[in-house]
Amino acid sequence: GAVVSQHPSRVICKSGTSVKIECRSLDFQATTMFWYRQFPKQSLMLMATSNEGSKATYEQGVEKDKFLINHASLTLSTLTVTSAHPEDSSFYICSARDPRLLETQYFGPGTRLLVL
Amino acid sequence: AQKVTQAQTEISVVEKEDVTLDCVYETRDTTYYLFWYKQPPSGELVFLIRRNSFDEQNEISGRYSWNFQKSTSSFNFTITASQVVDSAVYFCALQLNDYKLSFGAGTTVTVRA
Image (cartoon, rainbow over all chains, first blue to last red; front, side, top):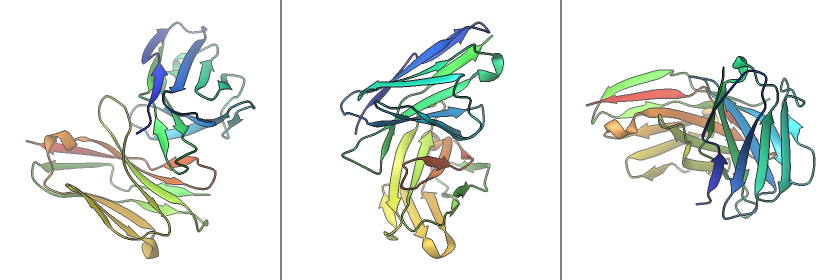
């Protein structure tokens, strides 16, 4: 199946700093990528849909100025958590849709963010 | 709005027992896709199955089987002869035409040796 990578896999940062997470589709071009957040022992919640060449669309309750998404190429989407605070500590997972296989999304391995 | 309910929070079984995970979904759309994912302690989501709304055939893949019943809006998952490696959190998810996935709360399966 298609491969999606995320970098970094784990990051620890101080409160107030910004953190950038990359999501790459390695062997296909993804016009659409999705960003999910998962708090400990909870389900995955969709944060936003990242569309190549256009602005991301955010789910209700997700602050677009805090979670900046850039999808500058068909293989890369980035999520920047700006001015991170301890409550932003979570597991962030991206997925990418292979347009050749319309119904299936491929998930990255996730990024664990810990804000001290 | 669509919704996915996994009523079982945790299930604990002894190795070789069968375990069935329930999933009930709600949607007004007639075209949709249902998924099951496995999330081991490492966190990575492992795709198990996709089923579209027009295909109610049950499916078996090795020790895994799925029962899709549109009449009751259920998409249940059974692991036969469970093994310790099956211990993980299992998520049922619903996808509509916008490709967004709505996940259930997940069921934690613990298989004891």
